[in-house]
Length: 347
Image (cartoon, rainbow, N blue to C red):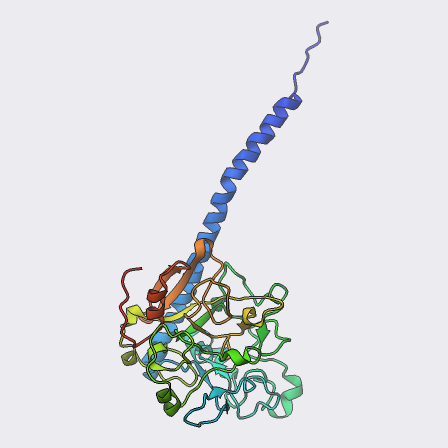
């Protein structure tokens, strides 16, 4: 009786099949990753568009843009030759009654589908203690702090979807115990210096008086160490700002309002440790163009984790533009200032 021999795969044939599958995966994987990154970039653009729409609606309702931050306390005094700054302790001091330290994001909450969160914000209490102090006999029962709330529209999906305290362990927060409430976007303060180099730990923000500004003399747009709010290096947002559309004389399509910002996490270098928190007025929610894009030099700069060095910026007219880390520095500086008058060619 004849036996029928069944022929199976040889080892060589099996290896060939595995090799072909591996090659196909290697070809398809980058395409899948590119598609995912394209989707994340689109979501990031939409986040900025939502912020832009909220800013425009706020201006329509109040005839002004929200202040870059609200600060009552100051350091340095009002002497004509001095340099007044905000008091960085205002947002986080334990006795927070009657204080502020809030950012411009807080004022946008009703315009970003966050009306319930806005309604529980107590504007008589500073950022860190909001929701804890000033609530009468229910203080012990109310440990909720509005500032520790994750808002998905304020995170770039390429970078993260929450505060990610494990990855960003050396980032400064208004309260070191906060695990929520981060942000990847910030308002443009201009092209000058916003935080004095002499105090990168506490990070007060320049808040010069009119006389102090006058004593600075003539400042050009490329004077990167000239304190904001000197007019020639001034952007839309700064402490206690009151910018209106009419103040943007360089044209709303030529001025950056909001941009993606770097989140640096260096263990040793304090200038490379970002501040984080959408409710925190100051270095966490303001940036300047003086250090360029994606340079990883200082916490006050713009940047992203998108492929190709792309960073998205919301212009004052509500449009969103992509920029790269290779953008000409002069063009970038002119885009950051609202009324210097510098030309902005195609970029």
